[in-house]
Image (cartoon, rainbow, N blue to C red; front, side, top):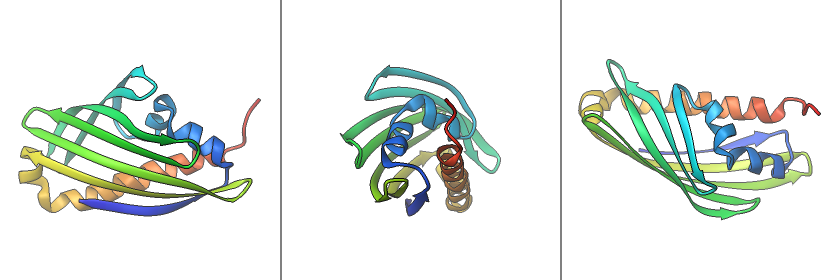
Length: 150
């Protein structure tokens, strides 16, 4: 499955970059995160409960920043497994300044799912993934556009 989009964020590019490349911050916008373990600035592990329809599992995702070009481009590889299922996702994001206080994020993700979750939930997967993607980006936008507290 391939997903792509553009998100306009009313926040400076450096702030957007810092949020999106900080696992502790960005995972607050992912649904059903059960734990986060940051190994180093380029690698982290996240345990997340995910599924499609009646097929759900707890996925242990190993995430690696493949490319970091501050503050404009990042590429991320995430691989995970749950009993009987596996997922791999490669994502790219490019940040550009509309002006000093507004950032445009262009993003794309290529997701490959295999195993039971793909076999049983194939018809539902695209819609479920789009719904989760919308939730994640709405959360990111809301957090970044919230007033900065001192």
